Image (tube, rainbow, N blue to C red; front, side, top):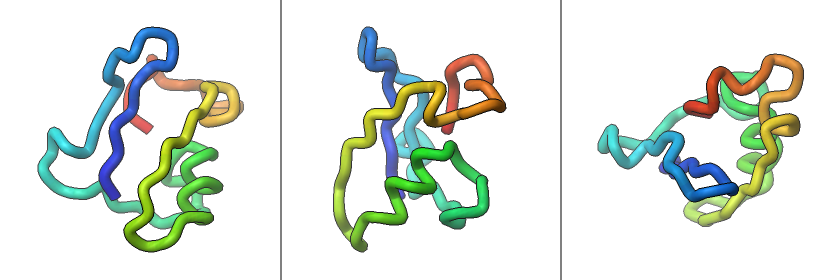
Length: 71
């Protein structure tokens, strides 16, 4: 999937798969990505676009945000 992550407070870009030129690949449900991606992407249909608004505490949980960078 392609993603574009920004800060809600100011719109600053955190990370994007578009800069790499290829979709980001991961396995859903095994903790390879932030918690909310595992939950949100699992509910999507193939080809669907979505906006996931994720607070850092819900996305990263106990492991923290790693400096506010990539998912």
